[in-house]
Image 1 (cartoon, one colour):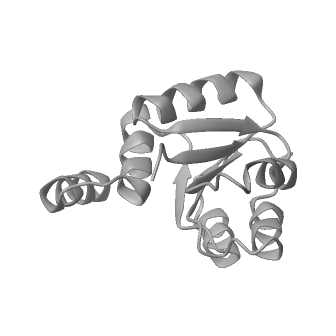
Image 2 (cartoon, rainbow, N blue to C red; image 1 turned 135 degrees about the horizontal axis):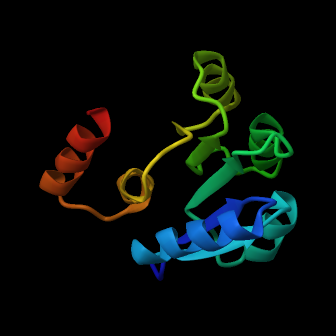
Length: 137
């Protein structure tokens, strides 16, 4: 399989640039969009491996975006929600909608990149364990 592809849904140009660079630093291709459905339709032939939903601003609804993925038949693609609220209810809504991981603001670039690598990287077991231990702490 070729380079793994990550769709990043954001309505912030600056956040898109930062997240694109972080995804690239993992060795993956980042596809930045404000319209998930359009991005999915345009990448269908090549496929994609992960969706990151930047919900750091209330203008993007993670539940709606995850529902869009399900309607398009991509229930098995992991989803990371970057939350604008570090509350249990925000996290539970994201997980209830189908998120694989909820990262509340603020989070470090290392936590983000470790999460991405953990979900879709071809990692040896020792590296996967190291990331698990780091993310738990």
